[in-house]
Amino acid sequence: MSAHILDGKKLAAQLKEELKTKIAAAKHRTAKHPHLVSILIGEDTASQSYALSQQRAAESIGIHYELQKMPAKVSQSDVLALIQQLNGYDKVHGVIINKPLPDHIYFQALMNGLSPEKDVEGMTLINVGRLFLGEPGLVPCTPAAAMALLKFSGEDLKGKKAVVLGRSDIVGKPIALLLLKEDITVTVCHSKTIGLLDHVRQADIVVAAMGKKRFVQGDWIKPNAIIIDVGINDDHGKIAGDVDFDSCALRASYITPVPGGVGPVTSVMLMNNVVEAFKRQINLS
Ligand SMILES: NC(=O)c1ccc[n+]([C@@H]2O[C@H](COP(=O)([O-])OP(=O)(O)OC[C@H]3O[C@@H](n4cnc5c(N)ncnc54)[C@H](OP(=O)(O)O)[C@@H]3O)[C@@H](O)[C@H]2O)c1
Image (cartoon, rainbow, N blue to C red):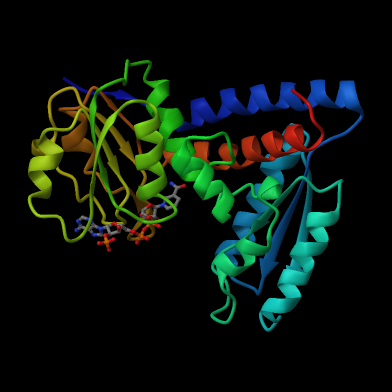
């Protein structure tokens, strides 16, 4: 048996087309368009290339993109002042703060200054609280992408047993909350978990988000399980996931590849949040 591939590029292309249509329709009705501001502090090469890919993704579907560059030595209060200014601009619907940040800048402090309605990364305390309570809000992009790929399988997920490997605030915990919202029974494992293999062996759904190259092995996988691999690890200049793809694909019913799985859908989820934020701010149903 070999698993069906949950193709992130294919899902991302579909979602992008849907967003493009929504944006065009909103523009037609309101003469307004979504506007994303991306704050980039310092000269980190990976952040610069991520910002460039955000710009391409945004502009390809009709989102206006504005890059706000700040020097690495900028003070936290100056960044907060910019964020507060952006909070007050009606034409700005979403703000993203690129990471990594210089050591003297605290991400959560910046987030706490950002209007939750413009928080397209879903990381303000209000949006985290909304996710916790299962209320509508802006959801962090990678967890939203993992869920979108899981649903893309078309399988009935209700009542299934899931194991989430990783409990970080930006990936593992929000994924666990999204799974719970779908009536999935969730176990969260971390570096101190005893008997991790036993948890994985019982799981109908495995979400791997540990940052450990090819950690999950095929013989741990329950036959026909669905595997979502969130990991991005360096593999001699290439990218590898947290799952040993070849052995796991022999047991699973569905599996995401790395690259080409969660990654492409994550960038579309950012754009989806911009569109959601835009619609709410202009009161468009
Ligand atoms: N595809 C995307 O768009 C995307 C976006 C963001 C992140 N990622 C990738 O997702 C992965 C996770 O990212 P992150 O930011 O959540 O990483 P992180 O903050 O380093 O968290 C890693 C989590 O994995 C757990 N862990 C580490 N080693 C473990 C082990 N041997 N057994 C069980 N649990 C273990 C840690 O447990 P403790 O809490 O006990 O330390 C922690 O909860 C990384 O590969 C990252 O590059 C991908």
